[in-house]
Image (cartoon, rainbow, N blue to C red; front, side, top):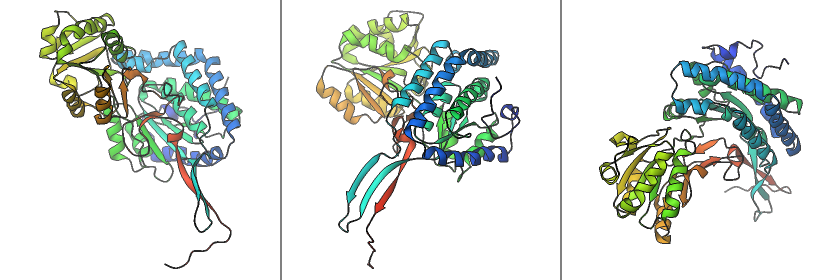
Length: 441
Protein backbone atom coordinates (compact mmCIF):
# COMPACT_ATOMS: atom_id res chain seq x y z
CA UNK A 1 0.00 0.00 0.00
CA UNK A 2 1.33 3.45 -0.91
CA UNK A 3 1.13 5.81 2.04
CA UNK A 4 0.99 9.58 2.06
CA UNK A 5 4.27 11.19 3.05
CA UNK A 6 4.46 12.39 6.66
CA UNK A 7 6.79 15.22 5.65
CA UNK A 8 5.94 18.36 3.74
CA UNK A 9 8.13 17.51 0.78
CA UNK A 10 6.83 15.50 -2.13
CA UNK A 11 10.19 13.81 -2.67
CA UNK A 12 10.49 10.80 -0.31
CA UNK A 13 14.25 10.69 -0.83
CA UNK A 14 14.75 14.03 0.91
CA UNK A 15 14.34 12.44 4.35
CA UNK A 16 17.32 10.18 3.55
CA UNK A 17 19.55 12.94 2.22
CA UNK A 18 22.63 13.63 4.34
CA UNK A 19 22.36 17.41 4.14
CA UNK A 20 19.27 19.53 3.73
CA UNK A 21 18.76 23.25 3.52
CA UNK A 22 17.43 25.39 6.33
CA UNK A 23 14.36 26.06 4.20
CA UNK A 24 13.59 22.32 4.11
CA UNK A 25 13.57 22.10 7.90
CA UNK A 26 11.68 25.36 8.41
CA UNK A 27 9.03 24.18 5.93
CA UNK A 28 8.29 21.24 8.23
CA UNK A 29 8.07 23.52 11.26
CA UNK A 30 5.83 25.99 9.44
CA UNK A 31 3.49 23.21 8.33
CA UNK A 32 3.23 21.98 11.91
CA UNK A 33 1.85 25.24 13.26
CA UNK A 34 -1.64 25.05 11.69
CA UNK A 35 -1.71 21.36 12.62
CA UNK A 36 -0.98 22.30 16.23
CA UNK A 37 -3.87 24.79 16.24
CA UNK A 38 -6.25 22.10 15.00
CA UNK A 39 -4.93 19.56 17.51
CA UNK A 40 -5.42 21.97 20.40
CA UNK A 41 -9.14 22.10 19.67
CA UNK A 42 -9.81 18.42 19.05
CA UNK A 43 -12.04 16.59 21.48
CA UNK A 44 -10.62 13.96 23.78
CA UNK A 45 -12.68 11.33 21.95
CA UNK A 46 -11.11 12.12 18.57
CA UNK A 47 -7.59 11.95 19.99
CA UNK A 48 -8.36 8.68 21.77
CA UNK A 49 -9.77 7.16 18.58
CA UNK A 50 -6.67 8.18 16.64
CA UNK A 51 -4.26 6.73 19.21
CA UNK A 52 -6.10 3.43 19.27
CA UNK A 53 -6.03 3.33 15.47
CA UNK A 54 -2.29 3.99 15.45
CA UNK A 55 -1.71 1.25 18.03
CA UNK A 56 -3.63 -1.25 15.91
CA UNK A 57 -1.76 -0.18 12.78
CA UNK A 58 1.61 -0.95 14.41
CA UNK A 59 0.54 -4.55 14.94
CA UNK A 60 -0.95 -4.85 11.46
CA UNK A 61 2.29 -3.63 9.87
CA UNK A 62 4.71 -5.40 12.24
CA UNK A 63 6.37 -7.36 9.42
CA UNK A 64 7.36 -4.28 7.45
CA UNK A 65 8.46 -2.48 10.61
CA UNK A 66 10.74 -5.40 11.50
CA UNK A 67 12.10 -5.48 7.95
CA UNK A 68 12.95 -1.79 8.09
CA UNK A 69 14.55 -2.22 11.49
CA UNK A 70 16.61 -5.14 10.21
CA UNK A 71 18.20 -2.77 7.67
CA UNK A 72 19.25 -0.45 10.48
CA UNK A 73 20.55 -3.31 12.62
CA UNK A 74 22.60 -4.66 9.72
CA UNK A 75 24.06 -1.23 9.01
CA UNK A 76 24.80 -0.65 12.69
CA UNK A 77 26.49 -4.01 13.04
CA UNK A 78 28.63 -3.36 9.98
CA UNK A 79 29.58 0.05 11.39
CA UNK A 80 30.74 -1.49 14.68
CA UNK A 81 27.90 -0.23 16.84
CA UNK A 82 28.22 -1.47 20.43
CA UNK A 83 25.88 -4.20 21.73
CA UNK A 84 24.25 -1.66 24.06
CA UNK A 85 23.40 0.69 21.19
CA UNK A 86 22.24 -2.19 19.01
CA UNK A 87 19.90 -3.22 21.82
CA UNK A 88 18.47 0.29 21.94
CA UNK A 89 17.98 0.22 18.19
CA UNK A 90 16.45 -3.23 17.90
CA UNK A 91 12.74 -3.88 17.39
CA UNK A 92 11.26 -7.29 18.10
CA UNK A 93 7.67 -8.54 17.83
CA UNK A 94 7.45 -8.26 21.62
CA UNK A 95 8.76 -4.69 21.61
CA UNK A 96 6.31 -3.68 18.89
CA UNK A 97 3.50 -5.18 20.99
CA UNK A 98 4.78 -3.23 23.99
CA UNK A 99 4.96 0.01 22.03
CA UNK A 100 1.39 -0.50 20.84
CA UNK A 101 0.25 -1.30 24.39
CA UNK A 102 1.84 1.96 25.60
CA UNK A 103 -0.12 3.89 22.95
CA UNK A 104 -3.33 2.25 24.10
CA UNK A 105 -2.54 3.19 27.68
CA UNK A 106 -1.95 6.82 26.69
CA UNK A 107 -5.29 6.80 24.86
CA UNK A 108 -7.11 5.89 28.08
CA UNK A 109 -5.36 8.46 30.29
CA UNK A 110 -7.21 11.63 31.30
CA UNK A 111 -6.85 14.38 28.73
CA UNK A 112 -4.87 17.21 30.34
CA UNK A 113 -6.03 19.90 27.91
CA UNK A 114 -8.53 22.23 29.55
CA UNK A 115 -7.86 20.86 33.03
CA UNK A 116 -8.24 23.49 35.73
CA UNK A 117 -5.01 24.05 37.65
CA UNK A 118 -6.44 26.61 40.04
CA UNK A 119 -9.21 29.16 40.20
CA UNK A 120 -10.57 31.89 42.40
CA UNK A 121 -12.87 34.88 42.54
CA UNK A 122 -10.92 38.08 43.12
CA UNK A 123 -12.15 40.79 45.54
CA UNK A 124 -13.27 42.88 42.55
CA UNK A 125 -15.53 40.05 41.34
CA UNK A 126 -13.34 38.82 38.47
CA UNK A 127 -13.37 35.02 38.07
CA UNK A 128 -9.78 33.85 37.50
CA UNK A 129 -9.07 30.33 36.19
CA UNK A 130 -5.74 28.81 35.15
CA UNK A 131 -6.13 25.93 32.68
CA UNK A 132 -3.78 23.58 30.88
CA UNK A 133 -3.14 24.18 27.18
CA UNK A 134 -0.83 22.40 24.68
CA UNK A 135 2.70 23.67 24.18
CA UNK A 136 2.12 23.85 20.40
CA UNK A 137 4.87 22.48 18.15
CA UNK A 138 7.18 20.09 19.98
CA UNK A 139 10.42 18.89 18.40
CA UNK A 140 12.17 15.72 19.54
CA UNK A 141 15.88 15.17 18.81
CA UNK A 142 16.85 11.69 19.86
CA UNK A 143 19.26 8.82 19.33
CA UNK A 144 18.90 5.23 18.23
CA UNK A 145 15.72 4.12 20.00
CA UNK A 146 12.81 3.82 17.53
CA UNK A 147 10.29 3.33 20.34
CA UNK A 148 10.78 7.03 21.10
CA UNK A 149 9.25 7.77 17.68
CA UNK A 150 5.99 6.19 18.79
CA UNK A 151 6.07 7.35 22.41
CA UNK A 152 6.67 10.97 21.41
CA UNK A 153 3.93 10.89 18.79
CA UNK A 154 1.40 9.35 21.16
CA UNK A 155 2.05 11.74 24.03
CA UNK A 156 2.08 14.74 21.68
CA UNK A 157 -1.28 13.80 20.17
CA UNK A 158 -2.95 13.12 23.51
CA UNK A 159 -1.72 16.46 24.89
CA UNK A 160 -2.80 18.33 21.75
CA UNK A 161 0.64 19.08 20.27
CA UNK A 162 2.07 18.68 16.78
CA UNK A 163 5.41 16.85 16.81
CA UNK A 164 8.56 17.10 14.72
CA UNK A 165 10.83 14.06 14.98
CA UNK A 166 14.56 14.13 14.29
CA UNK A 167 15.90 10.68 15.07
CA UNK A 168 19.43 9.47 14.50
CA UNK A 169 20.74 8.36 11.13
CA UNK A 170 21.28 4.88 12.58
CA UNK A 171 17.50 4.43 12.91
CA UNK A 172 16.38 6.18 9.75
CA UNK A 173 14.70 3.16 8.11
CA UNK A 174 12.91 2.20 11.33
CA UNK A 175 11.76 5.75 12.02
CA UNK A 176 10.54 6.33 8.47
CA UNK A 177 8.49 3.13 8.56
CA UNK A 178 7.04 3.91 11.99
CA UNK A 179 6.09 7.49 11.11
CA UNK A 180 4.52 6.33 7.87
CA UNK A 181 2.30 3.83 9.71
CA UNK A 182 1.38 6.31 12.44
CA UNK A 183 0.70 9.10 9.96
CA UNK A 184 -1.62 7.07 7.77
CA UNK A 185 -3.61 5.73 10.71
CA UNK A 186 -3.81 9.09 12.46
CA UNK A 187 -4.99 11.07 9.45
CA UNK A 188 -7.59 8.40 8.65
CA UNK A 189 -8.88 8.76 12.22
CA UNK A 190 -9.30 12.53 11.97
CA UNK A 191 -5.96 14.12 12.85
CA UNK A 192 -4.57 17.00 10.75
CA UNK A 193 -2.18 15.96 7.99
CA UNK A 194 0.95 17.40 9.58
CA UNK A 195 0.33 16.24 13.15
CA UNK A 196 3.60 14.27 12.93
CA UNK A 197 6.55 14.85 10.61
CA UNK A 198 9.95 13.28 10.25
CA UNK A 199 12.40 16.14 9.93
CA UNK A 200 14.52 15.69 6.79
CA UNK A 201 18.26 15.18 6.90
CA UNK A 202 20.66 12.88 8.72
CA UNK A 203 23.61 15.19 9.40
CA UNK A 204 24.07 17.86 12.05
CA UNK A 205 22.87 20.68 9.83
CA UNK A 206 19.23 19.65 10.15
CA UNK A 207 19.59 19.53 13.94
CA UNK A 208 21.10 23.02 13.91
CA UNK A 209 18.29 24.35 11.72
CA UNK A 210 15.69 22.82 14.04
CA UNK A 211 17.34 24.22 17.18
CA UNK A 212 17.21 27.74 15.77
CA UNK A 213 13.64 27.65 14.43
CA UNK A 214 12.47 30.03 17.15
CA UNK A 215 8.96 31.25 16.48
CA UNK A 216 8.05 28.11 14.56
CA UNK A 217 9.00 25.50 17.17
CA UNK A 218 7.74 26.06 20.72
CA UNK A 219 9.97 23.61 22.59
CA UNK A 220 12.73 21.10 21.85
CA UNK A 221 13.30 17.92 23.84
CA UNK A 222 16.68 16.20 23.38
CA UNK A 223 16.80 12.55 24.39
CA UNK A 224 20.04 10.60 24.22
CA UNK A 225 23.61 10.74 25.41
CA UNK A 226 25.38 13.53 27.23
CA UNK A 227 26.90 14.89 24.02
CA UNK A 228 23.56 15.27 22.26
CA UNK A 229 21.90 16.88 25.26
CA UNK A 230 24.78 19.32 25.77
CA UNK A 231 24.75 20.28 22.09
CA UNK A 232 21.04 21.08 22.14
CA UNK A 233 21.04 22.88 25.51
CA UNK A 234 24.03 25.06 24.59
CA UNK A 235 23.12 25.73 20.96
CA UNK A 236 19.34 26.09 20.88
CA UNK A 237 17.49 29.39 20.58
CA UNK A 238 14.26 27.43 21.04
CA UNK A 239 13.28 26.68 24.67
CA UNK A 240 14.59 23.26 25.76
CA UNK A 241 13.00 20.65 28.02
CA UNK A 242 16.20 18.96 29.12
CA UNK A 243 16.37 15.22 29.68
CA UNK A 244 19.39 13.79 31.44
CA UNK A 245 21.80 10.88 31.43
CA UNK A 246 21.47 8.31 34.18
CA UNK A 247 24.49 7.57 36.33
CA UNK A 248 22.27 5.84 38.91
CA UNK A 249 23.37 4.28 42.21
CA UNK A 250 22.13 1.60 44.59
CA UNK A 251 23.35 1.95 48.19
CA UNK A 252 23.30 -1.08 50.51
CA UNK A 253 22.97 0.45 53.94
CA UNK A 254 24.16 -1.00 57.25
CA UNK A 255 20.55 -2.07 57.83
CA UNK A 256 20.04 -3.59 54.36
CA UNK A 257 17.91 -6.74 54.22
CA UNK A 258 19.97 -9.51 52.55
CA UNK A 259 16.77 -11.17 51.38
CA UNK A 260 16.10 -8.35 48.92
CA UNK A 261 19.55 -6.85 48.30
CA UNK A 262 20.84 -9.22 45.62
CA UNK A 263 17.63 -9.37 43.55
CA UNK A 264 17.16 -5.61 43.72
CA UNK A 265 20.72 -4.85 42.61
CA UNK A 266 20.60 -7.39 39.76
CA UNK A 267 17.27 -6.03 38.54
CA UNK A 268 18.51 -2.44 38.74
CA UNK A 269 21.57 -3.29 36.65
CA UNK A 270 20.78 -6.21 34.38
CA UNK A 271 17.09 -5.96 33.52
CA UNK A 272 17.95 -3.75 30.57
CA UNK A 273 21.43 -2.28 30.95
CA UNK A 274 21.26 0.08 27.98
CA UNK A 275 18.54 2.35 29.38
CA UNK A 276 19.02 5.46 31.51
CA UNK A 277 17.39 4.06 34.66
CA UNK A 278 19.83 1.14 34.86
CA UNK A 279 22.08 1.34 37.93
CA UNK A 280 25.73 1.93 37.10
CA UNK A 281 27.29 1.95 40.58
CA UNK A 282 26.76 -0.15 43.70
CA UNK A 283 27.69 1.44 47.03
CA UNK A 284 28.11 -0.86 50.04
CA UNK A 285 28.35 0.10 53.71
CA UNK A 286 31.69 -1.04 55.09
CA UNK A 287 30.03 -3.08 57.85
CA UNK A 288 28.10 -5.19 55.29
CA UNK A 289 30.87 -6.01 52.85
CA UNK A 290 31.60 -9.46 54.24
CA UNK A 291 28.03 -10.77 54.47
CA UNK A 292 26.29 -8.94 51.60
CA UNK A 293 28.77 -8.30 48.83
CA UNK A 294 29.71 -11.89 47.82
CA UNK A 295 26.09 -12.93 47.28
CA UNK A 296 25.22 -9.72 45.44
CA UNK A 297 28.23 -10.03 43.15
CA UNK A 298 27.47 -13.72 42.55
CA UNK A 299 24.01 -12.69 41.35
CA UNK A 300 25.49 -10.04 39.10
CA UNK A 301 27.95 -12.53 37.62
CA UNK A 302 25.13 -14.98 36.94
CA UNK A 303 23.32 -12.22 35.04
CA UNK A 304 26.43 -11.67 32.89
CA UNK A 305 27.62 -8.51 34.64
CA UNK A 306 31.30 -7.63 34.96
CA UNK A 307 31.94 -5.78 38.21
CA UNK A 308 34.56 -3.04 38.47
CA UNK A 309 35.42 -3.12 42.16
CA UNK A 310 37.38 -0.60 44.21
CA UNK A 311 40.30 -1.85 46.30
CA UNK A 312 38.25 -2.66 49.40
CA UNK A 313 35.55 -4.51 47.49
CA UNK A 314 38.14 -6.33 45.40
CA UNK A 315 39.90 -7.62 48.52
CA UNK A 316 36.61 -9.03 49.85
CA UNK A 317 35.73 -10.93 46.69
CA UNK A 318 37.15 -14.23 45.43
CA UNK A 319 39.00 -14.08 42.10
CA UNK A 320 36.64 -14.26 39.14
CA UNK A 321 37.04 -13.38 35.44
CA UNK A 322 34.04 -11.01 35.75
CA UNK A 323 35.58 -9.11 38.68
CA UNK A 324 38.13 -6.48 37.70
CA UNK A 325 39.74 -3.48 39.42
CA UNK A 326 37.81 -0.23 39.07
CA UNK A 327 39.35 2.84 37.51
CA UNK A 328 38.48 6.38 38.59
CA UNK A 329 36.41 7.08 35.49
CA UNK A 330 34.24 3.99 36.10
CA UNK A 331 32.29 6.07 38.64
CA UNK A 332 31.60 9.10 36.45
CA UNK A 333 29.50 7.93 33.53
CA UNK A 334 27.06 5.44 32.07
CA UNK A 335 28.32 1.99 31.13
CA UNK A 336 25.05 1.26 29.26
CA UNK A 337 26.22 -2.36 29.24
CA UNK A 338 26.54 -5.37 31.53
CA UNK A 339 29.13 -3.61 33.68
CA UNK A 340 28.79 -2.15 37.16
CA UNK A 341 31.16 -0.22 39.41
CA UNK A 342 31.37 -1.06 43.13
CA UNK A 343 32.61 1.20 45.90
CA UNK A 344 32.74 0.57 49.64
CA UNK A 345 31.70 3.58 51.77
CA UNK A 346 32.07 4.20 55.48
CA UNK A 347 28.48 5.18 56.20
CA UNK A 348 25.31 6.84 54.91
CA UNK A 349 26.96 10.26 54.83
CA UNK A 350 29.77 8.91 52.65
CA UNK A 351 27.27 7.25 50.31
CA UNK A 352 25.38 10.52 49.86
CA UNK A 353 28.65 12.40 49.32
CA UNK A 354 29.65 9.89 46.61
CA UNK A 355 26.28 10.34 44.90
CA UNK A 356 26.61 14.13 45.09
CA UNK A 357 30.05 13.92 43.49
CA UNK A 358 29.29 11.43 40.74
CA UNK A 359 25.53 11.25 40.18
CA UNK A 360 23.53 12.95 37.45
CA UNK A 361 20.32 13.63 39.38
CA UNK A 362 18.37 10.84 37.69
CA UNK A 363 17.55 7.96 40.08
CA UNK A 364 19.17 6.90 43.35
CA UNK A 365 18.18 3.94 45.55
CA UNK A 366 18.80 2.82 49.12
CA UNK A 367 18.26 -0.66 50.53
CA UNK A 368 17.61 -0.40 54.27
CA UNK A 369 15.25 -1.51 57.02
CA UNK A 370 16.03 1.54 59.14
CA UNK A 371 13.45 4.30 58.82
CA UNK A 372 15.87 7.03 59.91
CA UNK A 373 18.37 6.02 57.21
CA UNK A 374 15.64 5.95 54.55
CA UNK A 375 14.36 9.36 55.64
CA UNK A 376 17.85 10.89 55.58
CA UNK A 377 18.56 9.44 52.14
CA UNK A 378 15.31 10.64 50.59
CA UNK A 379 15.65 14.12 52.10
CA UNK A 380 19.30 14.73 51.26
CA UNK A 381 19.80 13.03 47.89
CA UNK A 382 19.17 15.46 45.02
CA UNK A 383 17.64 13.42 42.20
CA UNK A 384 14.49 13.30 40.09
CA UNK A 385 13.55 9.98 41.69
CA UNK A 386 14.70 8.44 44.98
CA UNK A 387 13.89 4.80 45.71
CA UNK A 388 13.68 3.02 49.06
CA UNK A 389 13.91 -0.78 48.77
CA UNK A 390 12.91 -0.64 45.12
CA UNK A 391 14.73 -1.08 41.82
CA UNK A 392 15.95 1.93 39.86
CA UNK A 393 14.17 0.38 36.87
CA UNK A 394 10.88 1.78 38.18
CA UNK A 395 11.77 5.32 37.12
CA UNK A 396 9.64 5.18 34.01
CA UNK A 397 6.52 6.97 32.84
CA UNK A 398 4.66 3.72 32.27
CA UNK A 399 5.58 2.33 35.68
CA UNK A 400 4.52 5.60 37.33
CA UNK A 401 1.13 5.37 35.61
CA UNK A 402 1.79 8.21 33.17
CA UNK A 403 1.71 6.04 30.06
CA UNK A 404 4.59 6.17 27.57
CA UNK A 405 6.98 8.93 28.58
CA UNK A 406 8.51 11.63 26.42
CA UNK A 407 11.73 11.39 28.43
CA UNK A 408 13.07 11.69 31.97
CA UNK A 409 14.00 15.21 33.00
CA UNK A 410 16.82 15.83 35.46
CA UNK A 411 16.41 19.61 35.39
CA UNK A 412 14.37 21.57 37.91
CA UNK A 413 12.32 23.93 35.74
CA UNK A 414 8.80 23.05 34.54
CA UNK A 415 9.26 19.28 34.61
CA UNK A 416 11.38 16.81 36.59
CA UNK A 417 11.43 13.02 36.36
CA UNK A 418 9.37 11.04 33.83
CA UNK A 419 7.58 13.50 31.55
CA UNK A 420 4.08 12.47 30.58
CA UNK A 421 1.03 14.30 29.32
CA UNK A 422 0.90 17.14 31.82
CA UNK A 423 4.56 17.94 31.21
CA UNK A 424 3.72 18.64 27.55
CA UNK A 425 1.28 21.36 28.50
CA UNK A 426 1.61 24.98 29.50
CA UNK A 427 -1.18 27.10 30.94
CA UNK A 428 -3.21 30.17 30.31
CA UNK A 429 -5.42 32.31 32.50
CA UNK A 430 -9.09 32.89 31.79
CA UNK A 431 -10.49 36.05 33.33
CA UNK A 432 -14.26 36.59 33.28
CA UNK A 433 -15.81 39.79 34.53
CA UNK A 434 -18.99 41.79 34.49
CA UNK A 435 -17.60 45.02 33.13
CA UNK A 436 -14.87 45.72 35.68
CA UNK A 437 -12.27 48.35 34.83
CA UNK A 438 -8.99 49.02 36.60
CA UNK A 439 -8.38 52.32 38.25
CA UNK A 440 -5.15 54.29 38.28
CA UNK A 441 -2.55 53.43 40.89
